Length: 290
Image 1 (cartoon, one colour):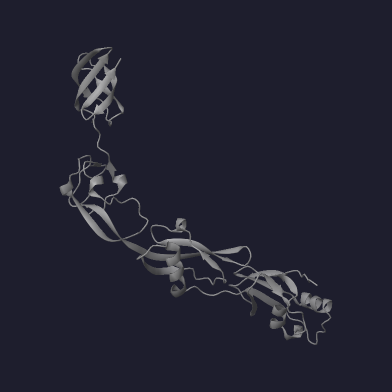
Image 2 (image 1 turned 180 degrees about the vertical axis):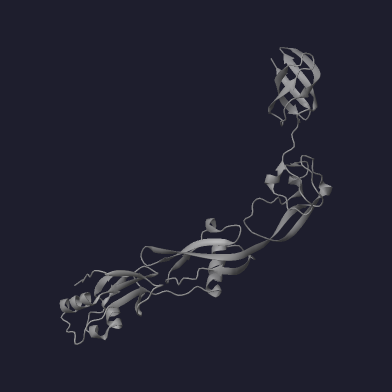
């Protein structure tokens, strides 16, 4: 027979009043009550008493509930009943237990992991889940431990995680808006955060582009620091080709906006000063079709 009782209090484990009987599963059983009080040695060890507390919480069975439980199960109490406290069994985290968990979650060969800090609360026995989406560039990794039938508890770890990577650095000061040349770059290798997708790993992706701000010598170059060089820049002197039916007219003009091949820009008519749209064909060459 299943016996239910009312839980009279939920008391945080940080404010204990007396020792608690530790519970491993999701149910408080007769054997747990018997372990906490020898008065219940005859209680059916598999009898379900109630739900076990969540990790970090105490559940207290008051004296009047103890008396009721004994009466319902034909147990004679030879001494006054005392309250019984139940708590979920937990264990503290350690760098030694966390390291293989983090290595498995990271799943990167040859990654170097140094655990700096971690959750200090005890955690129940269960399965750790550290999704890569929870890993921040500063090394803070938020996860959880899954325990019982459907419970979870948040955990975190702060780690220095690096892998050997290659990146491009400025070998001298790169001025805003000035085209970058290969001689101004160095290719570097060393330990870096594995999921930093901002850094450029090839000088070919930098040469010919322009920095959006001045970059000091030694600065690792990120994609967001660069702008792609246009085929036509505003103010450039360009060749204009106008096609009207079978007739073709060529003349030089001034670009009033910037763009790349296939894009439309504004061009200033040198004869009357008016602007008109034209499509960039290649560097310094635009086309107008009517």
